[in-house]
Image: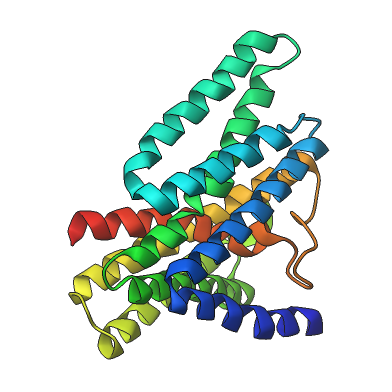
Length: 260
């Protein structure tokens, strides 16, 4: 518990500070996080007996960020298509040495660890991006805290027992309510949009962040590991700490672009 608190006291201000500064500072943060997340994802695959395309996925990640940081979102779809064709082409040229499951896992590694997480940078780059990014982060944290507190006190119906035996329906609803409450506080003191927008975002984040948490738990259970890594004392790895944000960030980003 002490290690967990110390890590949070050091890591949270650094994380929020680099996001607040924006521009190259946020870009640096996101690049580092995605490379570490990709490494952890690859290691989980190896624990499952899947051969990792370490060099290829790293090269694709570097190219992805070069295109994203220079050309912006216009290159995202093209890069995703190219990555899909590269992966399928490798399967076609090296089968049966390369299996369909190996190809699928490595394609997913970039989609999950790099593409989804890079929306942290994209969200920060939007008009009023610092407010929206902080809102997303605070609502994810509120959901986690609410689910833990309510679940511990009132939880009795398991939410997904095969994935996470401690998470309950009551805790999940508590996390959603905490997310809504924090969104209303944020709207009251920060403003910037209609209160309905904040409620909508709180519901989207409250649900998606919990699904992201469960997905990572399912991934680790498939590999028979407790944590995705040991980089953050008391918290595990990057995926352990950012699994909820990975699912929430793209939905917030595209939701704002659609509704603004």
